[in-house]
Length: 142
Image 1 (cartoon, rainbow, N blue to C red):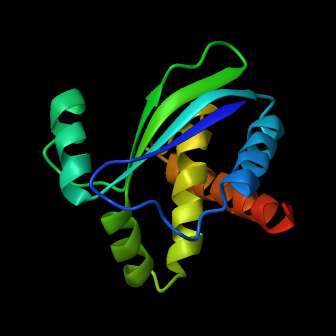
Image 2: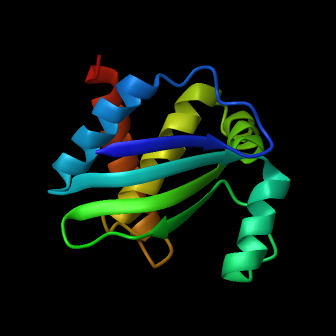
């Protein structure tokens, strides 16, 4: 497992424990019968994620996360862009802890790489259940 933590236009989130996250994400992948390969998390702001959304997906809107999947069979790999601005505004909107929301989005990207979608009918609820399971794993990861 190799996790790269990058930033574009923002500072690295101070509340993220990289070593703990590595163990946690490995456990999340294993819970889905997957093995983590190279994961690259790129933290950015709203303008940075909008640029990625326009350039690669031809979407003209802000989002909290964009995942590019390079997985092969059981080995999950990918680039995961996260807008810290949107994560913070979502946390405020849903009255949740911003650090907890950031961990939810970090897991969300990996869950996409594990094959879980959230765009079709009923899929959002399935994704939320997997996110909640992942957050419970985080609570048990020291």
